[in-house]
Every structure is written in C-alpha cells, then in structure tokens.
Image 1 (cartoon, rainbow, N blue to C red):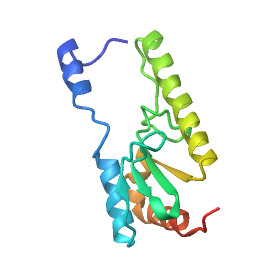
Image 2: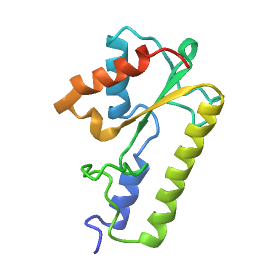
Image 3: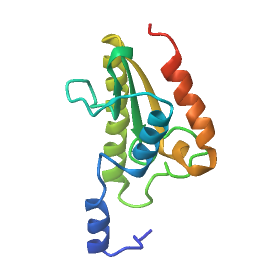
Length: 143
C-alpha cells in the first residue's frame, strides 16, 4: 500500500518525533507529581535512560510509545505494523523490543524495579486507572 504522505511530508513527520517530553510522558509526570512523588528525569547512568527515576526507592518508570516499542496488547490500535517497507520496519521494531527486554533485565539485576507505561494507557479516558497503577507501583515496598 502506498503512503498517504509524500516523501518530504513523511520525512518532516519523522523528524519531529522526539524521545523526551512527549505528551504521554508529560501526562505520567504530571500524575506522579500530583500524587506527591518527586523524581529525576532520564538519568544517563542507568540502563535505558528511564523517563522517571525515583532514586531512594530504586524504582524507574518508562513511558513507551506503542508503535515504536510494539505494545503486545492485541487491543492496542497504535501498535500496528506498517503496511509498506516491512523489510525496513520489522528488524527495527524487533530490535527496539529486544533492547527494552535487555534494559529491564539489567535494571532488575542492579536491584531496580521498573514499570512500563504504554502510550495508549495515558489517554484521557482512563487516567484514574493509570493513577492507581502508578500509586500501587510506587507504594509497594522495595525488594
């Protein structure tokens, strides 16, 4: 299937995609802050540069884009595969998921607990559910 955008439009669209301070991450940061927790952002010395780091609790939160990190939930409509250039996209997206698994393993081995929040979970329709999930993760005792 042909792309709906021209080559230049697609290039501009991809260029605008950032790795920090995206809406889903900002929603999670706002929720966590409203719960009274304080955190650091993107600590480079930790595997995967987690989005939110709670140092004394030894906990981290990653906010993953459903497409880029291939959310495994079959109900997620954002995580679909592209219909064109699969020879390019499949290895790229598979490598992302492999890297995510390696990162979580390294963090666990180093004594950190990690929570992955998916982009689709940050949609406005169920922020109360996400807030409960964040609260539960942050309140559970350190291991």
